[in-house]
Each structure stands twice: as structure tokens, then as C-alpha cells.
Image (cartoon, rainbow, N blue to C red; front, side, top):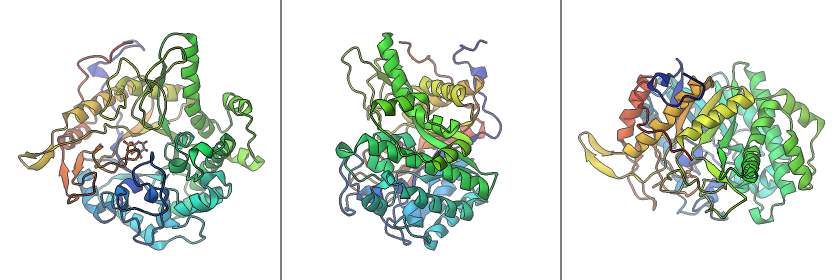
Length: 487
Ligand code: BG6
């Protein structure tokens, strides 16, 4: 076997202790947006997803206000995850449940108690928690009053929030992520960075300063975590999008490299602890001068992450040489790859890209990697099955099988992979479109795009499939009958 070998059954080996599971975010599952002392978050005023401008107050057509009611149904939901044999469950803590406004000095005990109960339930089933501290849920007050992360004071508010979490849960939660898809702030400043200034009026100076504040806050949280409990493992979380040159023209190759670097920069800062030369040049070329204190530099340098996590849904192409149809990535740009199929939402399906990104990140950073999001958003149809309503979601099984086979390939390539949490293991409200009908789960939730439904939960065909994958530690995966098409 050579380093360039492709798929073979003998490579379907996952290490013992591999963390199989699923992922969610508070704003997409919890609901109860105004219960338990919770304050409003930026999500509560997004009526129809991130593409719509925020409103002044929550509106009834915002599906996230009730979401799938995990706030009241968490015990039953976690029992279903346990039935699949989950080793790990990724969820986020809603910042505005703990600090309703974000700038208070004392936390909201009722909010803290809710996550105690969630952790109790996970412990009962032997499921390891993986907690995201900030997943697109900045308290609305911080957005309105401070313009989100453009204001340096948010570092202090975030430190207080993170310290509260580590002190309360630090002995129970080993794996933590600071900011979900931290690089997405480049594209969605309100959703990702709580920046209320509309995108078209936000200066690049302010945007990059906000990014700097988030990076410093992430390092500060890492410091507090390790001081609280040296066993805690902190990871950054990057939206990974492998970017290929559309043609072999060297200008396309360079364009693809630059696009990748826009994302690499976030990992470089988290892992290497300093601004890379290419980013310093970008800032110089744009005439941006960041306010970076000596203390900031020390924090970044001395408190780097223990592992790198990322989401992976698709790859894109870049070109400067010809007209090409724009891609429809979740948040990122890029152009369409003519060799790949796409999901119903136009996200191009590229299992081999996952092996590529795993190898790239490992070669670049040499840190353990955690795939904390991956999956297929699809329209499911509920049908009658022998054990009640179900969904025959063979398309989802095929998607996940093919991606997991590539994870196994990367592991055989020598990459250290801690685990895999599929996105939206239970159906939830989509982040980009705010739809219920864009479903990712192994568990169907009875709710439609108008908010109608009983919220009942049903096991899909993929539920049994994933249970078998976990039970066999990946041995039940099937190598795809055909290699991914070659360009
Ligand atoms: C990631 C986010 O970008 O993609 C999740 O971290 C999101 O919050 C997921 O739900 C899938 O995107 P969407 O738009 O299909 O919900």
C-alpha cells in the first residue's frame, strides 16, 4: 500500500475510544427563548434566517423561539441518543441564559441549573459532553449597546462568562470549543460576531478589530480553562471549506490558496499564537492598523489550543480566469465544481474533500482534529414503518457512509482524529435558512416550516444505521462502489 492509495476495505479502522456522536446548538434546539431568566440573543430577532435583516423584537414566525423544545424534552432526547450508542454529544450553552444581557457581574442561576440537568442526563447514559461556549448566540444587548465584538469590552464579558462555565462545569466537561466557526464572522458579522452595524456599512478596520478581540477572548478562555482544571481540552472551531483551483492556470491556483488562507489564518492564530505573515500583508494592503496590546500578544502566544475542530459540508472552487457560476455555499463564496453533485440546497457533496482537509490540517498544525459537524440537509418524508412513522433516508446514509470512509482513510494516512459528531443528530432549525424542512437528523421531529406539528420524535432508517456504525466502531461502513470523480 502506498501513501497515495485510495479506498480499500482494510483501511476502515477507527481507533479504540473514537468519539462517535452528534452535534447541536442551543439556539437551534432549545426554544424557551424567554424562560428560566434567559435574555434575548441575536438569534431571537432573526425572523427568517441570517439572510434577512434582524427585527427589533422577536416575531412569531421565528422558528427558533420554540425550536424543537429541547429545553423541556432534553431527557427524552438524550435517551434516544444513548439508544444509538452515542459516545459524545456536542451542544452549546446559550450565553444569554447565563448572562441575560451579557455585561452583568452575576450569572443567572436558573440558566446554570438547566445545563447541570443536561449534564446529569448525559452522565446517566455515559455520554461525554462537548460544549461550545459561543455558537451564534451573542446576547442581543451586547450587539445593540456595544456593536458586538467590535468593542474590546466584550473580551472581559466573555472571560467572565467562560470563567463561570469552567468553574461550574469544569470538573464534568473535558472537551470545550470557544467560538463556533470563528471564521464565519468574515461573512456574517451579525450572526457570528453580534455586530449590529449592517454588513454594507461595516468597515474592514472594524471587522478585523472584532476578529482580533474574539481571538484574544478565545486565548483568554483557554487560559482560564487550564487554570481551572489542567485536564480540560480546549479546541478552536473552524468552518472548513477546501478550495480547489477551477483550472490549472497558476492564477487560479493562487486564488484558491488565498481563499484557503482566509480560513487558515484563524487556525494559525489559535495553534501558532501569532499573526502569520500573509495575514499581516493582507492587513497592510487594506490599510488596516489593528490595536494589539502586548498583553494580547502574550495571551495569543501562551494560550494556544489543545486540538482543532471544524465543520465540513462542502468544497468550492476559485477562479480568476473565466466566468463560472457562483457556488451556493452555506456562508462562503467560491464557484461551482463541475465534477460534483450538490444537495437540494446547492451544497456540493465532496467526501474526498474531508480526507484532504484532515490531511492538510494535520500537516499544518500537528494537533489532534475533531470533526464536530458534517451531514446532509435534506427534505425528509415521513412514512409508515413496521414500528411506527419513520423516514427512509438512504440518501443520508450514503452521504455519511462515504464521508466516514474518507475519515478512515485519513486515519490510515496517519492523521490523529479524536471523533466525529454529525450535525443536527436530531432535526433542528436550520441556521442559514431558518427552516425545519432542511433536516439533518437520525431523529425526525414533527414540526414544519410554519411551526405546525406535535414535536413528536421518530427514529429514521439512519438511526439504526448509525447505531450499527458506532457499535462496530466503523466496521459496518461500506467502501463506496466508485471512487469520487476525477477532474
Ligand atoms: C454550520 C453551523 O454552519 O452549519 C450550524 O455551525 C448550522 O449552526 C450548520 O446549522 C448547517 O447549516 P444550515 O444552514 O443548513 O443549518
